[in-house]
Length: 267
Image 1 (spheres, helix red, strand yellow):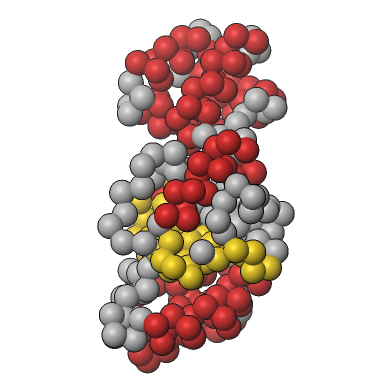
Image 2 (tube, rainbow, N blue to C red):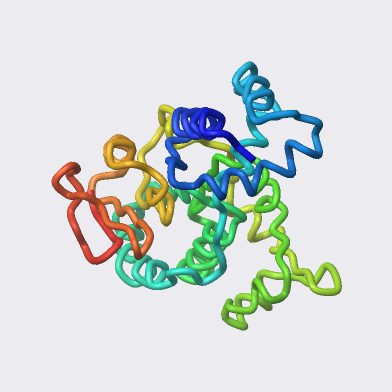
């Protein structure tokens, strides 16, 4: 069982590296790491953390973040955001960016890929035959290398793609096993997956028109949230949109975002 000092050590490290506050998640930490430590011959959490802290860019540090970051997502989750984008945002951007034809959308916590692939399908629906004339590639990032590996392959069980409309399932997914489907190469080409830690400086060359940061900030304390939202604001185009999870809210006193409707904000 994890001791108080070991628990504090893990929590402090994860907060410093990722911004995620696990101070109320003792059962989760013990449950997700206990068997890993046993399988890999560690005698204690302290022994494991010494290795992690000695090489913060090494394999064990990556494994720790992969194990402790929660990645729960599914197709059609909070689909009202996609409908709002198709109905309200894309028609305006099509006019505004008619000359450059460059749309910049970032899925900032892409997990196993359901969100960015859904965005890609919405964009293909909206632009139709005109899409080849536009750059609509989506940047999809996550702190976990494990989920990004899964996402880039685009493979899902049949029940995972079941919520999708029939036409999307038939057009964008091919059966590759008994119960498994894979996103077509055409769809996978629309998403650029990259490992990225939201606590780091943003390296992006151009601001985004739309940023999805859904169901992430629930794991951050208020100060970390404010700092992240300031960075997000700076990297949005004027008039750009931020989507957060439907159970989340942005503290408008601490940021300059304009409230549009629940979970949707604008610069």
